[in-house]
Structures are given as structure tokens and as C-alpha cells.
Image 1: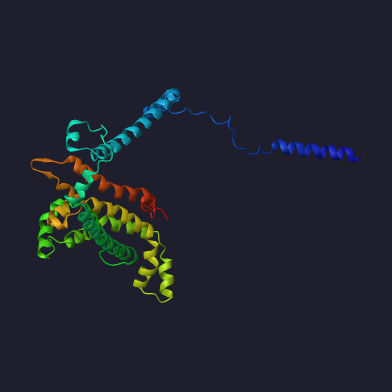
Image 2: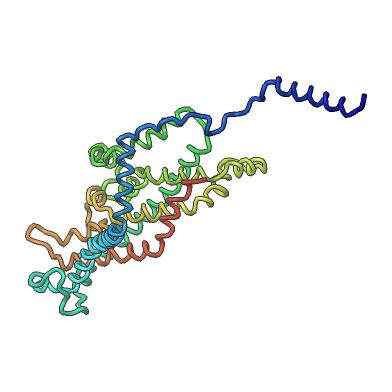
Length: 334
């Protein structure tokens, strides 16, 4: 028998076994899966798609309108802020008769009329008011910074019982209106013998500044604790860490508190008027009030005094405004 018939019969046997073997399983293709019907869009989806189509169609019109409204709102806001300042500035150069006869936006007849400024300084005691305001401002800000930074350091770096209660008490103190506690505050100030002294305003400004503590506390959280641990390994105690490490790193927050708290003290009228009624203790805000009496008010002199009060605040804000924004955002992220 030759080899060719043997190879042919073997090939036939292999083919028959391949036909009898079950076909391999394959994953169903995308055409083998029956198509499922898509769910009907909900009312919210229909509203959103309709709004998107309407917005795309109206964008050529809404774009210029939105830009116009944006700039119109900015111009209106600038006018609301600038027009009163311009009115006061022009009124400070007018005479009493000119103030009564002309409109608020009419310019004065003479821009060199400085009689109102002289009257504000001599009769209104503006110079003494600036001195008293400066003393109260410097002492109160120094105490606020020391108390606020120490309180924030203790709350953030130490763990003690009632820590959450202390923070909650600070928050609760900010929600209580100061006017509702003035009767008790006045009795305490009088009992301590601080009435009709500068210390009355200084103590009240230092003891009621909860916002400064929160500013220091938020910034303190961004200072790593590893600095404290490294200083303790070198033998430093807690007071040294606070004074030489933590306090210098709080300069942005300190600058923010100085500006915000300083402007608040500078413009405060109620506390000096209530607790320091003596004429020699008048601040700049109460000095302006002396030109208003029961028979009228010298508005041109008040305008001149207002300009004198606004100028230092405006200059300080323009020079230090970047510290306000940087200090408020510092500590918000790590």
C-alpha cells in the first residue's frame, strides 16, 4: 500500500472529527444584542435642552446686552460712591450764603476759600480730636494684636477641655448686638472708674474684637506645626515659639487687622460720644458733631471737617489695600 492513500484517509478522519466537535463560544457582537428603546426625556431634560437651544440662538443678541448692563452697573456703583464725596468736597469751599443759594453739585465761586477748614480746626477742636484718636488707635490696636494672636495661638496649638465651647462662645459673641449690652457695659465701665477717660474706649475696643481673633486663627492654621516641634527640640518653650516663630509669620494677618480695625476705630462715633463726653476727650468723629446745634447746622464747616477726616483714611487705604486682600485670603488654603 502506498503512502498517499494513508495520508488521504488520515486527513478525512481529522476533518470528520472537526465537524463533530462543538463550535467555540464567542462573545456576542454589537449586532447580536437587541436594541433597547431609549427612555423618554424627563420634563427637566426638555426644559434644559430648550433653554440651551434658546441661549445658543440668542447669544448674538444677549452678548452685547450683557456687556452693556455690566458696564452700566459699574458706572452706577461708581456714581453712588463718588457723587457724595464730590458734593462734600465742593461744599467745603463754599460760604454759608453760597451753600444755601447754590445746588449741591454746583462748584464754589472760589477754590481758595479755606475759612471753613480754619474754623473746623479752631472752633471744632479737630487738632485735639486727631491727637485723642491717634492715642486711642495706637494703644487699642497694640492690645488687639497681642490679645488676638495669643488667643489664636492657644486655640490652634493646644488641646484642652472646652476648646469647642470657647470657639463657639466667640462665635456667639459676634451674633449679639452691642447695643443690647450697653447698659451692663456702662455700669462696668463706671464701676472701674474709666468713665470720661481714654481708657474706656481703649478697653472696649480691645475687648470686643472677635473678628480679629478669627482672622488670626484662620491664618494660624496655615502655619505648619513642624516648626513648633523643631523649635521645641532645640529647647524653646511655648512663649519663645510664639514670640520668635509664630508672631513674625503672622505679619500679613496683622496688617489686615490693623487696617480693618484701625478704620473702624477711626470712624467710631457711638463709644467716644457715650463714654467720653468731656470736650477735651473728643475724637474727630465727635468733633464734627459739635457744629450741629438745635437751631441749625453749619454744613459747609462740617463738610470741611469731613474732608479732613476722609483724607488720611483714603490715603491709607490706597497705599495698603493689597495687604487687605492678601491678608483676608491668606490661610484660606494650605
